[in-house]
Image (cartoon, rainbow, N blue to C red; front, side, top):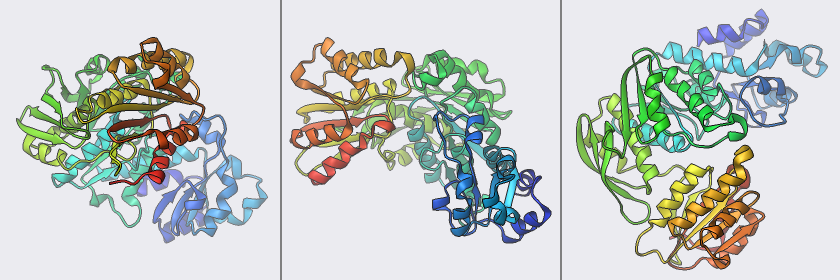
Length: 489
């Protein structure tokens, strides 16, 4: 970490620097409440957030919590020099403050120094939907075939999350030598964000899953989203590999951006894809079967996840694995032991005979329709298919129209019941009614708590229920309420 340390310590006093190096660092924190003894605390301020790609309208100033971080055992704190100057409350801590101009940039430089000194392969994954599941599947397959994998924490994919994920290599007793490959999720909510991620962790393999209308409030158009996602391909290291979804026209076109790539690997369900699924079929709720074909061979796969979208996520992971020389048989064996990421298609079976698909972590039109399609194809044993869909946030001026069209599409899929939750989800219900669903099978609720109360007594044996919504709508409360009222198998 010497290179990165030197960069962030340029404005620290000699005494503070000696203290810093003498004690060493056991980890890194941006939350004073969760700071552990021996960690380096990064005091984020509104000015730092505004310089970077964060969409909130208000931010806390963590400089106020520097004393708390030291009470928790922080070894030192990185603080913004301009903010600290003249602050009498922080004067007692000045010999333990590392002063920089931009705290987020300092964190990123530190992570970049770790990546540079480590010098091994980085897999960067982005897309409008499916990137967390693709990240987890990729890490799972590579790990199952003997590689020591660093993966992004949870869905840490913004300008803080990517850096913090990298710094796991230097946390809790870990060493960069403990890892063979890093699999990092790289998200985007504003223009230029992917390029910033690539400066922190330049990818050897870039994976783009799809382009869909998400974050339109900040991105403006789907075309702008495609340009932003393409930065992951443009940011490839020379000689790297671009892994592109051949079934998505905008993603497939990104091969023109892969000027540094030595190899382009496509995946999909179509015949033109290098890595593809043949003979895809659902195996009840929660599983899919297909023949995996790669340039190196083929093998039968039973994936314990349902829906075409999850098969595509598995194909993306398979395409990455081929870059590392993993055989089709090894990939198939690894995929057979995979599991959905938390709140991303988890299948919950209840003792009373109904099943819930918990996909409540996030939502956008593309992912909602993909999951609704999977539920609509739930199988002969399903007596009633129910979709509980929360409002999809950050869709900008097109939000009402996108919700209404999604409602029409869900109705066309043939689900029996559609409930909308909060805000523009009212348009989901209206769209479904326009497409032929009746008032008795469609309802709107002002909150997830109201929907939860209604669903607890509504469900019955034979139901297959999808619960999905943007994080801010808290549709996970619907699932929690069912768990409280009904017993899991």
